[in-house]
Image (cartoon, rainbow, N blue to C red):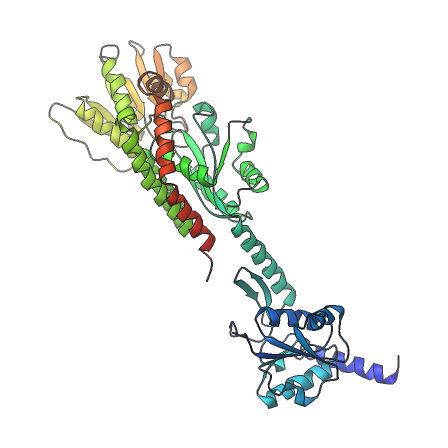
Length: 513
């Protein structure tokens, strides 16, 4: 190595070494460079990248360098840049709005910075001279008018590039994003299988945090009712993504056909029918609307849901009202509590001689309590913490008890209605010995997960377990023309396809400037 080359190498090391650990706060700006004169000093790969970035912004690019890389030569042949084949001179910066010092010689780059300052031009040095310049070039990604720029203030260009690439992949995913639903319900699996996949609040919270890290999933909510468990999401919905989600939900263990995935308009149509109660155990019931709103509220509070999924739920709710109007004559207005009362009215004699015991004071428990009072049933009502408001009616006696008094109340019960959302059994194995043996006893289990330990039923031959699944199956088979109902629901949804099209358009443009 010659003496001149050694001095030049030491100079490079000295200039670069002086910048170790230097940081600068930056003011983020997006320059409107269209038509402006941009000078690039240097002819290598870095200079070529700066030239293409400047051209993408509409700048008029001039390159000063004795030699050019193949990439820059191509731009010159295409007459996209002007090439001044010479070493840099101070006069080269005259008339330039922006200057890039992009040679492999730190001394020359420092000269370019100083010359630019004298000429009043803003300059960026690509090497260790960058703190002496006026701006730094961020790691940038452009697509369809969207520009993503990341800078680290000189701390880590590599980290900036990694973050830029991650955001670029995210933008690519947005282009392919659509509504999709993954789930299962009583129509695919028996309720005793479905309850194995039930998610407690804490389980949903933990799963939600994991889903936020899944590439291709942008917004989501969990809908869990007495007969279905679903994930409503905005994302790519491709096979790798849904396969991962199925594993997180443990639904990959279901047999083929027991877990459904619906995408695009099919997902929107499905959500509209679900909110209309078409796919409920009691077709046409309207509790599902409140449950869907609660699911959206939880997702919003946990920062899982954004504007697009809110628009989805709002649109599906509008269509669901239209479906109810079109199918009401076929479905009637019967809710879960209506079917419960119809069963009890028909079995008054069989279960006479004892009290009705209602467990649970939530939405379903309170609805059943109101219908019991309307139908003239006196009953005992167990609640967990806050005493519920008792519906009033002459001749009807309602007695309130806390759950810690349950054992005493079981002794006189002939009909036990379980309507809680507990994650554990309410009627446990040890309760079997407390249930009366002198007459038939009906246990109506409306909980998901089930409220009743199966051993309670096997321990007492006089106890009959009645599930919602059995009652609803009877009603669907004997009172409702479901093919006609589904046909009308599909027709209504198709008539409102424009709501989905607006949702799809909103999704594509949600993140544009």
